[in-house]
Length: 453
Ligand SMILES: [Zn+2]
Ligand SMILES: [Zn+2]
Image 1 (cartoon, rainbow, N blue to C red):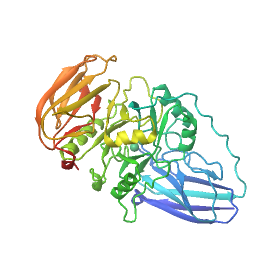
Image 2 (tube, helix red, strand yellow):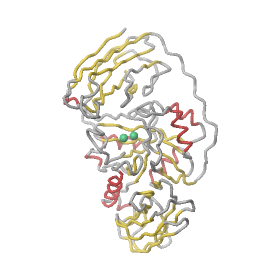
Image 3 (cartoon, rainbow, N blue to C red):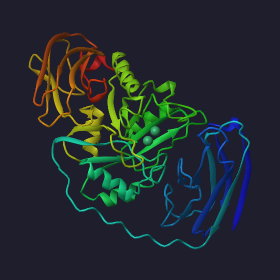
Image 4 (tube, rainbow, N blue to C red):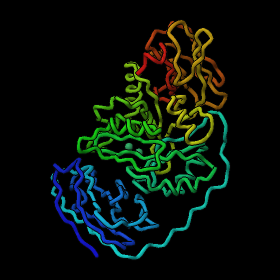
């Protein structure tokens, strides 16, 4: 059985979801869809229209493959195309929606969606084999990546390549945050075995900004419609133990990267407490200094913000790109313990240099993410013993201003004593002579937790 929907999209469809409903009978084993549109390209410049489909069954979302040329998914009981969830093809009302992420002048795009179904089920795929190896465990500092994509959305890497790439980089943990889908997570977690901790996630890739939901294996609705707010979504995911991270907030917006710049007025930062200040390679992503400035601005406004970093891997790095990773203190190298460390902000971001830092006031100590009462305080940063690139500078930042600085030497200490007032904070930065960040810590705050939002 089959049917076809056709229609036209115009400029005012941008930022909407165009639904088409259909009803499936009992006994369907496989559903096939094929979405095409014409023209694919508006005909000027390098930027194409960006249209994809999402499929919803009677029991919920069945997937999407964001920003991928292949918009012809097959969904069956035990097998589905990348981006889509296998499972019973229930009888009842289904919906396919065109997600109109970007449509450029002059609009007037015609489309067709063919929907076909039959009783046959696709064969059960082979269960992937787990990697050999045992990751480091116990209380300690763990390094890894919190943002990346596979070919289940618009990445080039298979799930296996994605895992291999994380292991090659020596990570203790890696998150997977495909755009608007969680379909790659079962395979990734099976393949990872005990070799590396997987933080399952999804990148909510909306029309007004991107956010990572870390710690979820369940699909989180990325659409914001019918009176819903992103703030309520953020509150909801945090309430069930997941971490909501505003991703690349100062990214370039439309038309170069439509939807990428953060524009949710109720989350500036609202209930959000995590912000990705370093996305992709530092120097080729000009939004990163703006992300750091926003993090400092929100700390100065009294928000207990936590900075994170994400490679936003879509393919392997090329020569000369300098990415950051997260270093998180956790009670164990497990998903819940790492998420606890991240929630507390006991973490920093770096492209290599390792450090520790603490503040001491009348015998009380605090490190990244921690808080001490106001009063006289001594803050110390201790640089690790590893090799460092030449020409790096370590600075103490007090409420956004550099107050002490020294050339980096492995094993060095930078110590300052001052009177901290309520609402003040410190971080440490390592920058090179061009001013590019190599390391940025989370804040130690002063005045007691109750003065912070
Ligand atoms: Zn993004
Ligand atoms: Zn991303």
